[in-house]
Image (cartoon, rainbow, N blue to C red):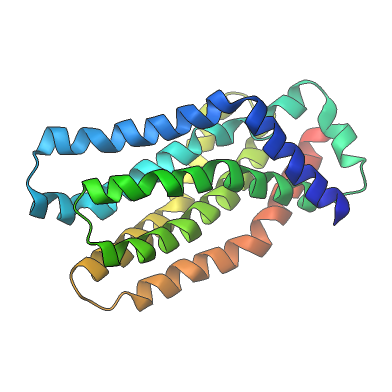
Length: 221
């Protein structure tokens, strides 16, 4: 566990050192989401109706930008084998990377989504549930995207392979996450969608690190 937490701290320090990547992710999210009110008009009812889907798509696309480089540097400079020799099992190494990605990408996106939700005319009482659903959704994205990155590590043209692996896996997360906020905005029962989103996270948390660890071992060999 000590090595696990040290590795997470290393990821946070690297993110602070190369903060332009995190800043670019947040700016991409803000600018992309801001284009829709400009294109569709400032009608409050229309913005509130389309806001859940737009914000969820923009968050997922923005969080996917840095995930391609999750293990690329370690693989290219040969340090991946040294990391696997630290005593941390491959699945633990993959999970630490996924947690580091969520802490350095998911949390800033959650913070940036609050003013955007207000811009899309969200009522104040709907924002806490929206942030909670995004928290679970971005965690699922870090797990599923990290797994896909490890599987495609070392493959030719992995930049094309990664979206093909990630987008189908993220489709249920996107659907359930957007329906949670949409149901709350229309005064409907959102608990089934929230439970299904939680089930996606409960499945991804134990399975994705093991599959990602197998991908890391295969890439190192």
